[in-house]
Image (cartoon, rainbow, N blue to C red; front, side):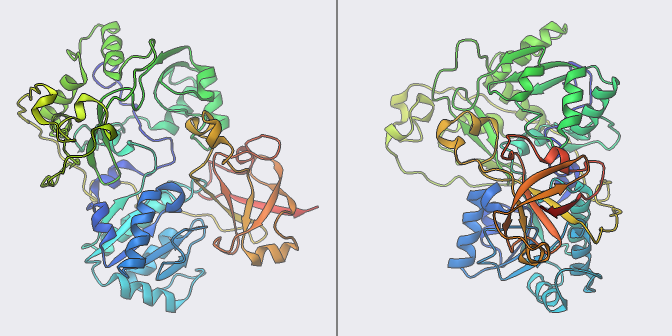
Length: 517
């Protein structure tokens, strides 16, 4: 994108994540380190819904190893029953809770008391040594500046602590490591002078006519952004090229669609939330019209009068590793590798031969103990010349403060969280899974239900920034008092996306009013 199209307007997130430079500047923890930490502090959404494997690891740590979990409670949480301490946090307050933890002075109006604050500070300790903070985006109806400010304060206040970013979208960490963000460079590099547009800025520029075209790589914009109205206007006005192997509402706005091979149809690498790079193997043949990503990128470059000089995934992986140090080819070449954490020295564990039928494909022959009988593997030597400089907290502007408007005493603050089974492209394409998708409901604390005089199942009129919609309410005491929780990527009883009427993308927090019929 940068070298062929000469554009710095790149982003791997849909306005629903966190500042990539801030995440790059944090001292990182691995999943194993989080699962074995004396104290884990969660500052993210419900891990049972967003990252269920990490949820199981942390739950095991609390139940079997009796390690402590302190959670910032934004809404329903699968870890609440095993957490040592839960601190209710309303939208627009996460940075105030973080400040209270670092300086020991309880901010005015918090939903918990001095006793809970003192206990949390005792569990974290003075410097945060041995503590892992799991940080993500718990509320996409709230500006990212709130949670980013909280993360920065925790990083500065507890310098010995480490952080595990909990970005839920598959391989987003690998994309960011390859520089798919305006100020990032491949190989976890950082350049503060770059001034490209992120996703939301690009949508605004497309809608206004300042930007004329957009290239979408594998993502359904309309299924992932909160401001669907802006996204629809932007796609309507723009020239849209989509490279994807999945469906989605965005395809209806595409001027050109280039079918791409997807997971299980190609070889390559994937990077998880801890930065571990592992290989993926081709299991099935892609449809005849679908091309590998490398072929599509090379042909597009040729159309623009340039040659990437890359004819295969292996050649691309070699170029990546030679120029950035990212272990792409090393992982591809080692079929028995459990993955490599970029930036860390790792020792590969010994592997026992496994059932060959469980790992089909010649690429996995060494993994299953077939050895040389699988044929000859030629490994290419790698000479790395990476010289990138990563971001530090002093380099990053994100998280340096946020102004939160006063809460309306007659309104409820909105928390929009992710669910494991939502209206994503993969879910909608599977008849077996589609029935698991829930409808939009308003989750309320019993205090707010009693105040309104309603019970679970009653329908209320919810009025937000752009209109009103009738929705059923449900009791959920995991939701802090004075708040309403909604699930992202769901629809109401009429099949409409109610959140387009309720969420105010221009405000730091969203507030709604509820009326009984």
